[in-house]
Length: 255
View 1 (cartoon, one colour):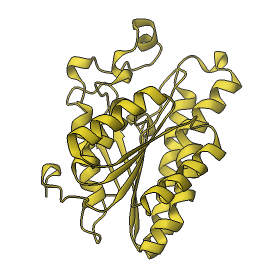
View 2 (cartoon, one colour):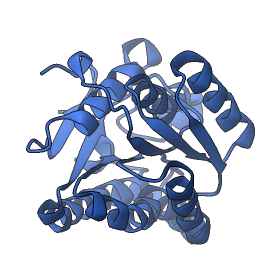
View 3 (cartoon, one colour):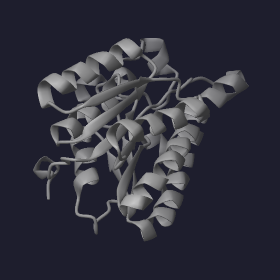
View 4 (cartoon, helix red, strand yellow):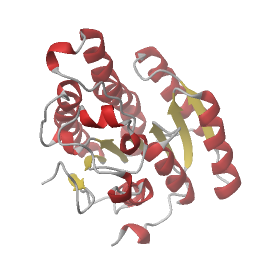
């Protein structure tokens, strides 16, 4: 079954982080187009409201903007509780948010390390912890964690980011093992360069990461990765794609 053949998700609810832009935004819209109601998590309230309005106008689905700082555990748990209260269920969790502070390891502040780990690894754990009871009661659910090719191969000037993304692999595998008896699937994607804010860094920011991300003209449209995420969320319950590397043909960091 190809991603574009995805069955609809009518009656289901998805919670998407990083939903104000990039892959998170594309994923939220794609899930809504497939029939799901959406909880939108990110820092920018104005951007989330715009995405929610677009989802309502284009798909007719309900969208709940929940602005927060993904490093704030209490806010994450409150957002999950609010999602369940409004929609009555949580069927899909997509941890698409990410942040990075590139630079040499000897120049990386501990506070920057903590921030990158909090957003990229602790937040997915906290949200998985929050949604697991809802999925367990329903006897099904799908968690999709968005890593990076930096979660498959480390490179210079990206120590915090690589550590977080490698850690996300272990978290996903543990969630999959724990969720399997309850019909909960956990899978992880390792995207290469996408035509998002990650693909439009300033020249000095791009140069800090080796190998450099591919230019936007050679990067993946986030909508293509979002289509795969929708397929993962709506695949037959007996099927799970545990992990996949998704990259442009001329990806600098993979293989």
